[in-house]
Length: 278
Image (cartoon, rainbow, N blue to C red; front, side, top):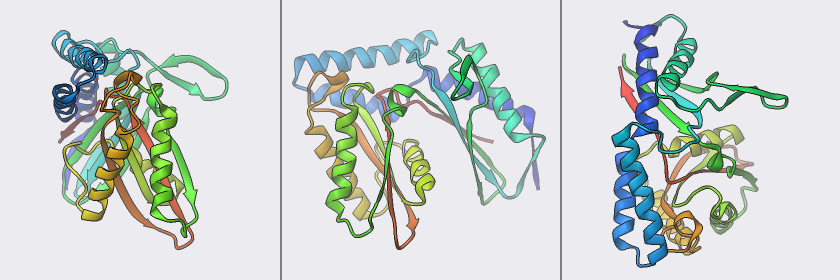
């Protein structure tokens, strides 16, 4: 049994906070550069150039890519042959607090969602999966709420056709319009229960956007939805253009015979996440 000290976890989470907020993911930056080269709409091209320049300045100057440094969502994959020596969740929250303070990132967490109150750095949202092996994989996803607020989910009747599902997804992006800072990465979760579908949609954002789903049928659906979404002509920052979304990532899970849950989780162009394996 491999033992992992919580001090190591806290230090790692702290480092990932700065990395995620200062350094736009390479796959996202590559997609933005590719889109910029292909764009013919002058106004859209200027917006893409501003987005790319912003990401480069943030990395160089160690500044937040966006002033909304999000509600951090931490994904944990814990090997079944690894043992955490100490309180895992406490170590993660401490790491977020240290990382956000050290990097001068905005504290956006409120303790009570109804009475609101003063903002702070934690507690954050933590998802833990038990996996094979003795490694510990930690991922920090700072989720801004300009795009998180555009999340939608629907419990479909299982007798509906695929066209109804497609329409719901495309309409979700259409409803978001320019408000969540396109071009988007659209995470889709299909199956499980209502909560499963929403989690799958969030996890879909972690997949490299240049890598499609392993199943051919889902890969085809991802490409078709991306094409439909880009025909909305919302464009970069809502100013028209060829690219409303950079990618559509779909994750699925088995579900009940009487249900068909579908969730949409949209990310703005600043899709930020950082991962390290211990």
